[in-house]
Length: 324
Ligand SMILES: NC(=O)c1ccc[n+]([C@@H]2O[C@H](COP(=O)([O-])OP(=O)(O)OC[C@H]3O[C@@H](n4cnc5c(N)ncnc54)[C@H](OP(=O)(O)O)[C@@H]3O)[C@@H](O)[C@H]2O)c1
Image (cartoon, rainbow, N blue to C red; front, top):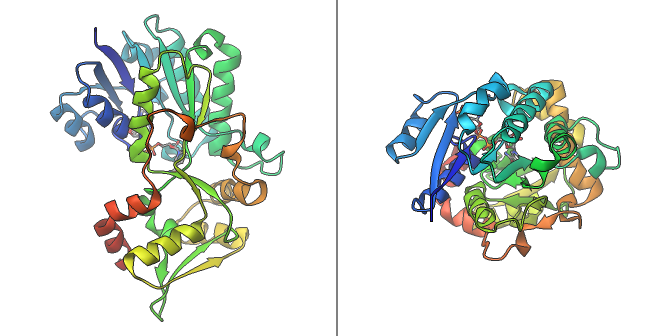
């Protein structure tokens, strides 16, 4: 069997890094080309040390600059990173550049597109400010409407809340200890509001299965989550496993938004975007479980990490963050 060339955008980050790691387990099947804006950065150099082909590419450069980076590709794992620029127009332009360049790649047999659902559609027009979801859903529509031939070989993955957010953003996702020693988690959800969650380190497992499944997942939109859990349930499990007292405190959406502005230094617009995405689950339920999406739990052979397994695996790092 000839090795397939798989392009991975975001290979130095969480999603793409997981994809690279999984594909490297099957070097006989895959040649991985990792894209980065800066091949000299340590994360890119670490990929070089693993024998990965690392190529410089910036999504800001438009489709013409991506065409050489995609040359000879059998498949592309594609993402855009809203948080790098926090600009809706930039994310849409980057997404369209990927799509245009992918469309112009004659060898391409599969595009795997990392997306989020349309927040306006999901909420029946109640939440209009979730830019980082809307941008990705507009790019999905762009593939469908402007590049129908590419859409026929595209798999869209909807990403949920990462378990890893509590490591990357402990201020938002981990409880804080008060003067009485209790660890309180303040969040704008009722105690029973379910949020889809996954360990982002499992991305590679899903992508590898999709790549091996021929046309099975073409045109499908996969809701990629291991468990629908409330933040209150996650907190209780954390308290039990680490043997610490916990308290869940529901705060209003506006109080949560203010805490993002003052505590996390977000602009008003971005804090509203972040808060509204959470409120979709409060007001509209677990929209990822809707019938229009293929549920990751229905994908044969895919075993995803649970929250309790994640807590056990990251015991040392999480305890350290809790004490910080
Ligand atoms: N955190 C969550 O819970 C969550 C949930 C659902 C969806 N998401 C989405 O996930 C996306 C981020 O993915 P991630 O978590 O894997 O990010 P990450 O770990 O922060 O890594 C970002 C990656 O994007 C690459 N990148 C950024 N700007 C680029 C550009 N202009 N050109 C080329 N590459 C660029 C970076 O590569 P270099 O720096 O090496 O160039 C890096 O590899 C965001 O759009 C976010 O909305 C996040």
